Structures are given as C-alpha cells and as structure tokens.
Length: 77
Image (cartoon, rainbow, N blue to C red; front, top):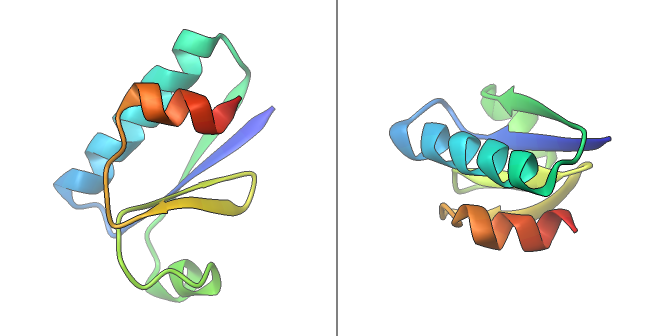
C-alpha cells in the first residue's frame, strides 16, 4: 500500500494536489491511503518550507507545485 501525504494548510492548490494524487492512484489501480498534513510543525519535519508538497511513503516528491495526475502516476510506480 502506498501512503500518499499531502503537505499543506488546506489551500485550493493543496486540495487540487490531493484530487490529482487520488486520481493517479485510482488510474493505476493500486492500494493507497491519502493523509493530509496541515500542521506547520508537522510539515516542517519533512524539511518543506513551501506548500503544497507531495510525499509518497514519507519521501518528499514535489514542493510548491501541483503536478498532473500523469506526473504523479510516474512517482507512484
């Protein structure tokens, strides 16, 4: 199971990133869990200073942008 973590305070870009990540995981047909991390202290533990950010299984993959579902699918493979 892939753990997809959305790091952000809940802004519109954070919500779009969550939607894109969910779409990518569904298209790949993989088991996944989405976790939204909104506390700044928790976000900073990842070393992230710019949101939104995407982490997969605890590893930060993107910071400060909203990748497309196609780009996220590549990260999930």
